[in-house]
Length: 188
Image (cartoon, rainbow, N blue to C red):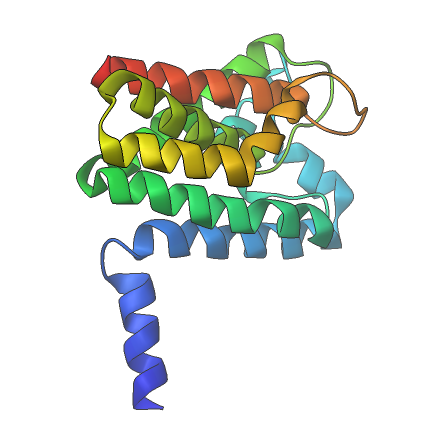
């Protein structure tokens, strides 16, 4: 029991682990709550160009349509988020919040009329940030990470084209652009 307590304390109360564990827990909680009410979940999403959709800029990343949607977002959030965290722990929260807010605002301004939910915009932002960081810094470590990310997650880039009706490709595209912009602002 002491080992579990120590592990949980480290995971949720110590940096840098808490930067990923709390959002991951919020994603699970938001998905469980959304399963209880589709209408409630839709209200927490980004609904473009409607005042009622503005709170979704902050809440939408933590709400997922179902368990499969959560399962598709949780592992890349942890892996890509961990790589961004590894790159610069002190700026992780600033980078993540900038990406989340910028992609949310862009979806609110330019997205199609639907409720956009899920962490995928932030995930695409992490992907864009890591790839742009390699392009701007050209350090061996950033280039190595970029190659690994492209090999493991390069297929995600297909998600920025408007191909599937229920997928927020706008969130993917704007997240990717937000990540590149954030890297450009801090590294370019």
